Image (cartoon, rainbow, N blue to C red; front, top):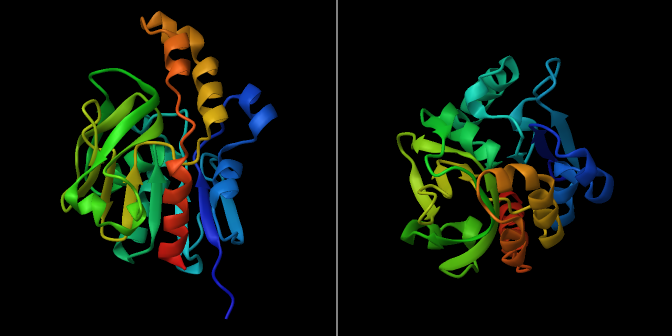
Length: 237
C-alpha cells in the first residue's frame, strides 16, 4: 500500500529577496525531509483556501509566517478550527514558529508579544526530561543550537501541555499535546537562510538597539534541524 502524502500548511511567504535566492518555506522543509514523500502544499493564508481532511495525510507541518497569531484574521480562525479537529483525531502535527503558536492557541493557550522583544539568530535550547525521551528529539544532545526568528510567544501554555524544550529567553521552545508538537525555533532554516533572515531585518534589528554584525557572527552552521525533521518523518512512517 502506498504511503499517504504529507500536508504542508503554508501560513505566509517570506521576504521576496530571500525567495529569489533560496525559495520559500515549503521548499526549505522539502530539502530536509527524508525519505522524500509526496506532499500537498495549501496556502492557508489565502482567503479562499480549502483545508483538506487531515485523515488523508500521514502528517502535517504548519509553517512560519510574518503575520501574528493575535491578528485573528478569518483565515487564522479557520485554521484554528482545523487544528482542533486534527488534535481530536490524533493526527500527527508539527507546528513551526507561527505554527507552534497557533497550535497552542487552538488548544487553549494564550499568545502575545514576548516581553523581551524579538529572539533572532542562533540560540541554545535545553530539552526537558520529557523532551529527551520524545521521539522528535531522538539522537539529540540535552542542549543544542537552533535558529530562531520570532517576536510573539506562548504567554500561557494550553492544558495538558508537555513541555519539551526551553531556554532562558523562551520558556516554551517545544511542547507536545497528544500527537501534536509545536517548536518555536526553525528546524527548516539553514545557516545561509538564517543569515539572510537577519540581513532582511537589519533596519528593525538596529532600531531596537541590537547589532546585526553580532547576530551574524553567532549564527551556527550546525544543522540539528535536519535531524528533528527526519525524526518527524520517521514518526509518521
